[in-house]
Structure formats: structure tokens, C-alpha cells
Image (cartoon, one colour):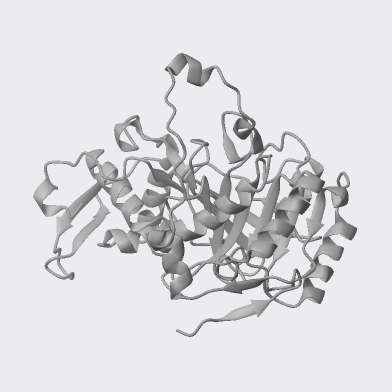
Length: 405
């Protein structure tokens, strides 16, 4: 690959090629290692650091800590930019965001590195004009130049940004898309480590903690592009759910067990804002029986799942529990179905569905029911079992070796 250089608004030059990547990966001159210091546990926990401060969330349930990193990814059109701008308004004004605590107003710098600048100005102008809460404009700054050409590879860009952070007491730098910020390659662990070092070089220029909120794209399979699971404190996935609906999945929340692995369903509101769809408790056992009562026939777990909009794994657990309770029966390869098909249908007369309730041993092992993305619209949050790998109890008529789960 030929060497590529460009001169930016700060007057510096950058090189983005294999040789640069190799030098950053340890093939160039080595800097002296930091000295090792090990202390007693008592001494370690007696120190209170600025980096323990939550910028989004509480002290015990933190989504974004000072000096932390959040990576938001999703497909184009899922609402990442709009959601990020809405976040900036809430954090900048100290207003809770999507029901998450914002302990104080946060100083934010936005670096939008793709698309026409005029359209981004328009988006921010509309957000400011329609914002009903406390003023956030004094807390938010926007990179105007170099538009779409900012890169952490460029030392002059890092120096210019660090100077701004110091002058404005910026707490969070929001920037994206990731691929334009100096990230080289498709996201192997080594390539990601090189990008981490670029962030580290920026931090070395500062005397205050700085957090990063980085916007990224998903790959063709709908997963985060690159091996990013290890790096951020929080990894969240933005998914479009039809016009006017979005799901935000907290795939990883290192400092928040409450949010980790859960999702929130959102509706788009006026003023480029979002509203959280209120969660409704479900009784999937009664729903499944009701659906079969309307049309009782042999169904696989996948077919049964579609009746009440569950995942196939959830449906298997519900059906197995109903077999255990004697309300349904299981058969492999029943009449009219393929010989290897695992199927369920009603068993005998059913009592009034009103008496049904969640059995005490479901989900398995006392696992909590967690919210996860909906495959349908309508505002009812589905739930999944934290003990997905365990089997539900089965009746004698459904031996374990006949059930593929």
C-alpha cells in the first residue's frame, strides 16, 4: 500500500498505512515501561479517585464512568445519531436519560465525522429549539473543522483536542463513526489495541479524566463490527424496530448489573426525542394455553413461539413446563408431522385460564427474567430466562433423550 498523507486544518500531517500500524503494534522504538507499584488491599481501597465518578448512572449502577468508554453500534438508520444527540441534551443539562440518573450537568464535545455539516447543524438546531428542559447549550461544544477529517492518528489533532478539553473542562468526547477516527483495519484484537493506544496518547496530554462515547457500525450479520467486546465499559446495540420504534440493548454494562444484558424499547417523539415503552408483565403459560385453545394442533416450539411472540428457546421452556403440569402433551413425530419433529398440543380438558400463574421453579434455577429486544411492535416487553442452558422438568411421557434442548 502506498503511503498516504493529508494536511488538515491544524497544519499537521498523518500517515495511515501498514508501516504505521506495524510501528504502533510494537515493531518501532520501545518507550520505557511504567514502574510497578503494588500496595496492600487496605491502602488500595482507602484512595478515592475521580475516575469512580458516574457521569451516566449512579455510584452503584454506572453506565458511563469518568475516564470510561461507551461504544454504541447499530445499522444505518437505526437512530444512533439521533439517540446520541438526545443523550447530549440530557447529560448536558443534568436531566435523567431513558430513566437513567445523570448526577450533574456534563460537559460534552461532539465530533461528527460523516455526512454534510449543514444537516448536522440543522439537527442540533431543531433539538435545541424543541428542548423543554434546562438549557444544555453551554455544556455542549461541536467540532467545526476539520469536518469529517478528524483523526486520532494526527498528533496535531490530538493536541488541539486536548487543549479544548482542558479549556472547557470537557467530561465526555462523543465521536464517530469509529472507522473514520484513526481505526485501521477491520477490528482484530491487535488493530483494536492500536486504536486504544491512540486514545491513551490523547489521555496522556490531559490532567483530568476524559470519557469517550464512540459510535460504530454493525457488520452484515448484525453484530458489532470487530472484536470490541473486551474494550468498552459499556457496549450497547441500537436496533430499528420499524418506523418510529427503536430498541436499545445493553449488551455489556461492566459497572451496572441492573442494565447488563437487558433492553429498553423506545418510541420516537417530537423534537428528536425518545420515550421509554412501559414494560408490561406477561404470563406466557396462560398465553400459550390460550393460543392453543383457539386452534389446537401439533406444533413445534418454533411454530408455538410465533403464536405469542416469544423466542424459540423461551417457547420450549414454556411448553415443557406445561407438559410437566399436565396441561399439554409432547410427542416426537406425531401423525401428520415429520418423524423427527418435536411437537406439542393440548392434553385433555383445560380449566379456566384465570387460575394459571408462573410456577415457582420457572425460570430454572431461580433465574431472573430479563428484558430483551422485541421482534414485534406493540409496547409489551418480552422477557428471557437467565438460566437458558438448564432444562425444564418434563413428564414421563417426554423423556430427556427425545427433547433437543
